[in-house]
Length: 170
Image 1 (cartoon, one colour):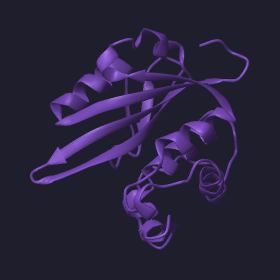
Image 2 (cartoon, one colour):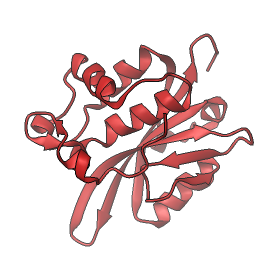
Image 3 (cartoon, helix red, strand yellow):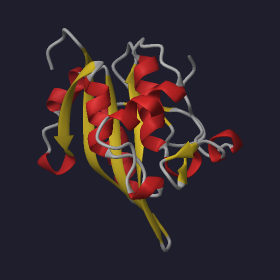
C-alpha cells in the first residue's frame, strides 16, 4: 500500500476522528502509524489503523479536536513492533540509528498559530529516512540532519519513537 503523504484532503475532511474531529485536521498520528505499518511490510488498511487506535486507551484527545493520544499510538504500534522512546532533550539518539522507522512528535508555530504534529520516517537501504506527512512531497535525510532542520523551521521535536521489527534488538 502506498504511504499517505497529504493529510488535508477532501476524503480525510469527511473521515471522522474522535467525537468532533476529522482526519484532515487531527489524524496525523493515525497517518504516521499507517505509514510505518505499511512501510515495514504490515499491510493494514487506514480504517483498520483507526479501529486499532480506538481500542487502546482512547484514540484521540479532546473528543478528536486535539489529535491522537500518544499512549494509544504507542500501545497500538507495540502490538506489531519493538519501540524505543527518546525524548529529544535527553540527547540519546544514538540507539535510534538502528531503528527501521521513526515517528516524530513535534510542536510548531507559525505567526500566531501553534500546534503539534506526528510524522513518520521509514529507513532506506542507504541508512537515511524518507519522512511522510511533513510536507506535500516526502523528504529524505538522515535522522540527525532532519531534526536539526526542523529547528530552523521553528519546529521543536519533542519525542521520537524508534521502531524495530519484532525479534530484533533495539
